[in-house]
Length: 318
Length: 318
Image (cartoon, rainbow over all chains, first blue to last red; front, side, top):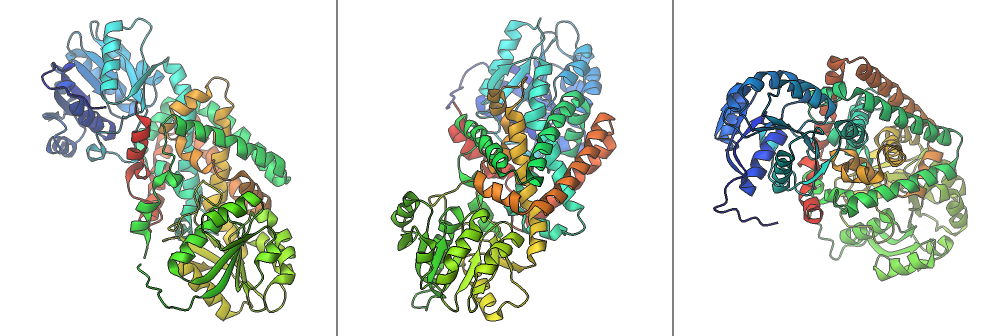
């Protein structure tokens, strides 16, 4: 995947990142690796974040006010929690450059369109997006250059989106390492409800269930977590505000998927209660096929235990 | 943790492993690294497994019949699925050496005691055990020498267990890299229900829920799994027979923990339905503390994304 971009005209003259957390900072790293932007600026909520973004070299200038950041930008990407989209869009709307592309990285898309589109003036091109990548960490220090490599970025253009601008945004994400897929905002929200939102919710949930038992101590939960539980704690360490906003803004799809999950769980619970070993074994066997598919598609490592054993050992022993 | 064992008399003359899957084969690797056993033999269910165990150098001899394997052994460890314990114990009981220690590695302990203890003759010392370690892989090829390093091994001795034999078994597990904790079989089963059994059950469950949706395809689930879902698929790829036996043999504790989990999930579901962002944010924030505890205790890596990003990228990109 070597890219020699020396001497090439950048794809965008000026990229404005509204918010500079894990995703915003990773976009900066990856866009600079690809050499596809002339200048990168950002806005951030706190003076500390602004300072940090500049100190890390993520941007040439960090603004407190998003309206300042978008001036002169031909690509604007909203990288704040979804709950801030409406306010941000209203603030930047009047200051967007004619011909600019506005996109976002929110984990819900119908609400993003609902909250952003009305503030986008004629002549500016809004195309919502979501790179399916991340870690449990947050903040400008959490970003890294390979975050998007091999991952999918979903774009959810309106039916009347400008084909040239859409193609340009697709190229941008590909240059960052992504594969690109187009779908409707509603379908995106349904797919992500099961591949992301419900998994996060049940991870948060089991961690809290474990923390509030009377007969098992927190210290026991921690000591014996290598038996499976610790896998859930990783995603349960994700940014609480970001995830609050996801659930508030993808209510219907999450409730539908959660209903299916609970229904299926009741079936397993009954099989346990009535000692139906045959059913348990069959359902457990079925689950292996999906894991194989994920590894074959390059969406997870084939190494046992996520390949983490060695790392844990080094810090975990005596 | 360097161990110089040259010239030392081994702790046990002859170790018999009944079953030579992930755990049995890892015990062989770790016991040979530590130099704590003279000879290792095993029994296995199929001729292929027997052949493989010998070819891998895990044992000097692999027997089809567990009764043959235990002859002359001063340490016998049952490493089969829990559902086979009763039959194995009945088969080996009459052939156990006077003074030998018999243990097991089953993920449930009350049922292990129930199924094994009655077949242990006087003069033989049965102490049930469970090393809290594993990966999603199975079979004699899956074992590796560092599996137990820094992990806890729980022993659940009867109140009248021989203190000298117990101390010896503790030392054995420490020599394999474990830290050792003693508790009652019933408490073990309660702790593991929440740290292991329920997490596996909900992982199996969400994978199957995802596989049976009408409006989201399997291919979409696989492509966009990096958003959280793929974390669950790892433990859902674990051995179906082993896990069937766990649930059939720890029914009460699993049903209790599952009841708590579902109750807590309903609370989250209601908060989503009624848009209670404050409650969501509070519950999500609480969950971070447990993750920090697990990392501080050396039971998981502090690296983002389990440190797996690089490995995935190499195989996942174009």
